[in-house]
Image (tube, rainbow, N blue to C red; front, side, top):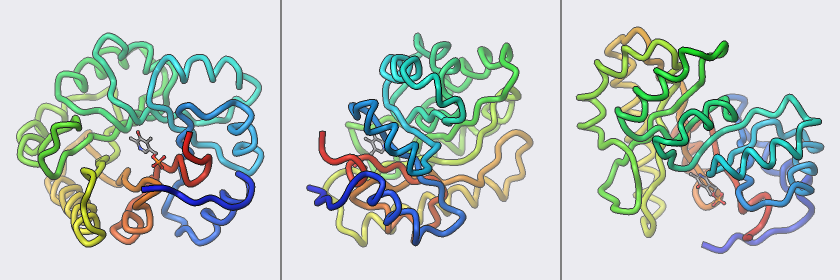
Length: 225
Ligand SMILES: *Cc1c(COP(=O)(O)O)cnc(C)c1O
């Protein structure tokens, strides 16, 4: 889907922020976005930035070291061998997509002073291009995930497959909310389920309608790069 843009980055941010419910936090997705555009978003009030690669985030953090109150979110697939570096540069990891990775992060996070905040990525429809738990797999793994004392498991992240209708996308986001509610009702110790990371440039109004609390927007703010 092509996104048609008008105005400056600050104007687009203002336009998107203004009608957002207070429960929704905007994450500016800045993969391949130049530093100057990130500074413009920061000046417009954005403090949450999403990157999909550890290395790109590390180099941007060096360049933006004068802006220490940025909250960095990893939204792309994380390889096991980059888990340590990811914990050093991100306060949030939305794309935790397997039990093995969660256990690794938990072990590494034991050394940190701040508990990292993570979302568990779920795949609500079969999609060979995406990582994540199916709902059935996730329900099976919950007991073990609940042993992860060094992580804050905040909620569920999902990305719909390409090519769905608006109705199907909305249904999928609602399924994600229901899955989180089911997990919440099981009263785990460590697993909290108050956050729903869902919604990108092409579908964020549907995600908000379904209860998203973290929306991840790139192109609608910065254009197609
Ligand atoms: C790139 C990306 C986004 C932002 O997508 P846009 O269509 O540019 O808004 C959101 N989430 C993830 C996981 C991404 O990789």
